[in-house]
Length: 505
Ligand SMILES: Nc1nc2c(ncn2[C@@H]2O[C@H](COP(=O)(O)OP(=O)(O)OP(=O)(O)O)[C@@H](O)[C@H]2O)c(=O)[nH]1
Picture 1 (cartoon, helix red, strand yellow):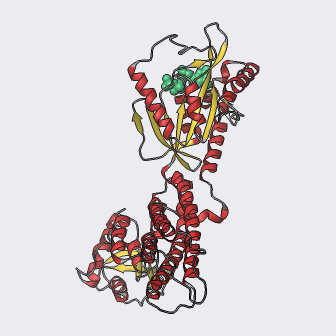
Picture 2 (picture 1 turned 30 degrees about the vertical axis):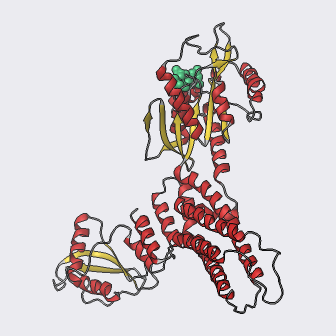
Picture 3 (picture 1 turned 180 degrees about the vertical axis):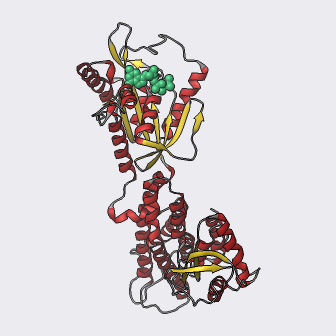
């Protein structure tokens, strides 16, 4: 294999000695067999990495040529001439990484981390992916797997013991040692599963629903966040009936923002709609509200909007929807925002917000401690329009930045891991599924052995506990197999199947 790369080098750089490994060397590349007359690139950089200290474990020859497509094409078509057609081909998608795995340079957890790194769209996704590339996760799972295989071997030896073999350790204490190990691994698996749920939020995006009465300013707030605090990320975004969704990057966090249909308004005076008092809710609107509720129930964060509106008597009051507030109360991360603060004086605003907090929010279990955030989309929009001319613009026009700050702090709470567990951000969904299966196997083991303390004689070699050892060993084998599928160190058939799934990405 080594000689193939050097053959290519000598074909393109006739008369030149082999490049010093791992040093960039300036070379003129020639068309092979042109006897140094036809130049392909007058100044290319050549780098030669002999195996095994290469990223793939194979020999690597890198040719850094000028970027014009004609140059690249000419060099690529010259390469087969150096070693003969049929001896070289283009790499399959992901083949370098696959070779790195097959040559033991990467374990499967690292391969997946690489795939996550390549597809990361936001800063937090990138950070989480990088955490998985250190190889520490793979080492942990391999350590557990080897422990379980060892434990299984010991359990199986007990089957022979039943046929009168001698043991240094009493069978009861052997089973109880294995059980202790299983318990320790089960505990760690729980932590890994919890951590992976947090990482999933970073990977798949945090679902945020904007709820509130019609006209409260939900669309205005979403547009302002997109304009000032977030950027729209590629990927799915679209409009379902009455729900507009966009994938946003808010300070490095991917979130799917859903601007929902307005719920009917309820004010302190109990009207249903300030624009159409007593109006009946039509079937289409009803469906929009049903969908908005469904969206809210699936969300990780709910922002409920209320707004300052003029009531029938000419005075200002807060319009809000009780149902959306109750939905928010059931969501772990929620925020209540009062829009249109510009409609009233600061003093009146404070009175309205305090009354809202004291008489409404405090009565709803779960929202007792929520402090509403007053904003004005109108003020924020006005500043955007005039920001070119303002000498000293307000750093947080309309309070939109405060909403973003609160959101980001919720995202941090939902996704952060203690410093010692940072690497667990790399646990992928596939790995989590396998960890769950592994847990199933270990729980099966625990059910099979039950309590092995007491009830057995402990003298000499002791008696074999009255448990189904074959079944217990089988549970350990299964659990170890699940871990092997995570790192790709499992049984041969399994690994082939996993490689297919991973490398097709
Ligand atoms: N005075 C004032 N008006 C605002 C403010 N924010 C939004 N509006 C106005 O309120 C109206 C409704 O705003 P939207 O953002 O469309 O409200 P929405 O909640 O998305 O409305 P629906 O889609 O019908 O549920 C528009 O006329 C906005 O110009 C604000 O801060 N102050």
